[in-house]
Figure 1 (cartoon, rainbow, N blue to C red):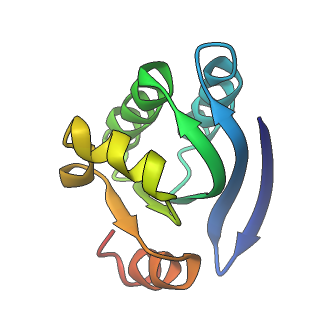
Figure 2: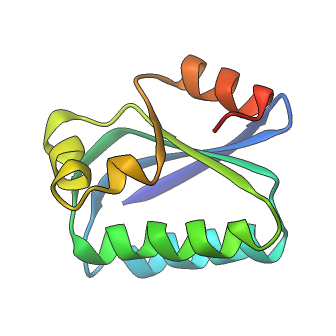
Length: 115
């Protein structure tokens, strides 16, 4: 798994690629904990290149989501491939997270505060 970071319009964008499984989720957890510690106001996770997410990866996302709520941080996820989207849907996380079809829609929502 790789994570590339960039900032656009004061939104931190993390482009994640590879698989987020038990072996890789600690790397993502470390990155997200740093963002929570910094009280990142708007975070976008681009999962276009993520082929698989297991329960440890989903737990990592939930942990960040809960942390960010303490300082009113906004998080959005975009570009889920069907296999990954089905994992989110299976455990109803698509009802918790703001999920968008692409980065442009997600950035628009984060900029407007609706994510």
